[in-house]
Length: 375
Image 1: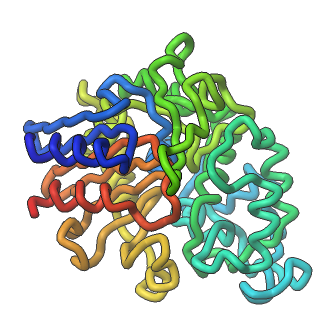
Image 2: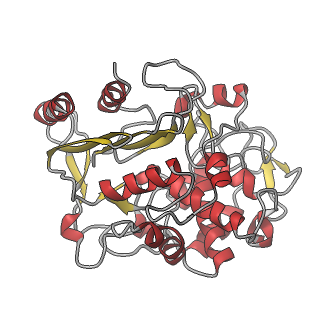
Image 3: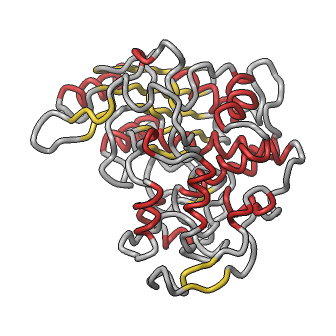
């Protein structure tokens, strides 16, 4: 415990982050340390560590028989029927061919539906994805509503044929639109009713709970010339519900809620009272790697050799000491990380509110993972 606390204290003292909360749980033993302007009660923008929560909501609908993993999504998302694909990833957006098959629910969960970000950010087809859909640092109040967003996406050609390549981020946002339409609810209502309320995750949603924006930490951006810059204050973009609830990175949550979700996965989909929130099979599917060795290599910038399950990475190598085989989870662009190891019951959570400067995990995350792995 002292070592974990010292790690956070030193990183706050040297200006690495303004604040941090860290948790390491091994069975019933739980270590928590807090430092700087974050506490265990703070609300944080969890960014992409919400992707597993989004995938869980999709799998709940699979469990309920609303659709199957191999069903084409165009039944619920007709905008994505008869898609066009750039002839090669390097082709201009006007040089396209027809998609060779429909996009399936499985494609979205595996992030292999043809939409998203590759290692090469200079590809011409990425310009409209970034320019029209605001797929940069999260700005929830500046994104168009879901129907308009999906219509805009449908006008942009896919970068790869369905199933061909792993691409980052956008598939989780499409999952959000799918869950909304298949459930007949807005995404925030569907997630609250089907996932967050059954688990008792009262702090989790697409904005701070009503009257509790003061618990939300500022969001910072690193400044090489001095103190970090505040890019979103507590009363900023996450203080009110957004027009577009982003399944890829729009959730607010707390340490206890993130731990609750991780423990649900470890228990095979059960809430604390023993009720199944999702099936054990669905949890197994979430935490299994689906990428080929070549797809992992092509996505090295993001995955660093890891595989991908549904909504998160799956370690398939031991390239680093923290890579216990089978570790599942992900990192978020607001300086967050949440992982679990199904075979050992280990849970690790690190929450900061300082934006990452790229897809590579910052030194504090790696230091924390080494500590959690015991060396």
